[in-house]
Image (cartoon, rainbow, N blue to C red; front, side, top):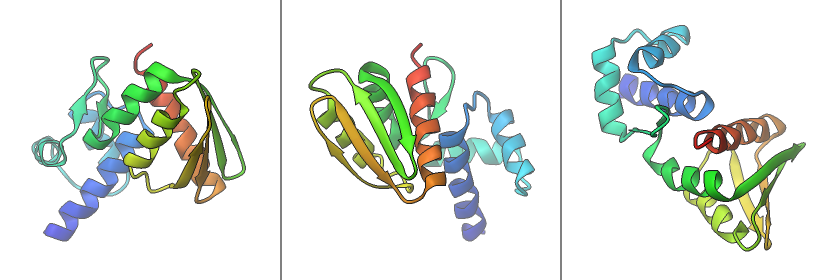
Length: 145
């Protein structure tokens, strides 16, 4: 039972980071689409256990991603990728803080980051992982707009 819960919570983490989930029902539907047989009550307990938060825009976000969301929505101007590299352009002087937030989020696709004054270079584990990171950053940027 613990293994199923852990696997389900890992799936929830991936879903919430990859998509804009607004309701528990939507989360249940996403989980069922990938083979988890669960109820809304189960998902509600998982949300509480994992410390998921809802942004004012109604999108669920992981507690560990809140700082990243704040930094990205306030300071990031653009995000681009080339192969497994992601380049994040931010307001002057804010890149070190954005890089620290990326590192603190402990995203599985991130190997590391280097910050200048207004640019962060993030090395992702693969080209697919860099796509996932760009999608997450764009989702977090759009959350405040």
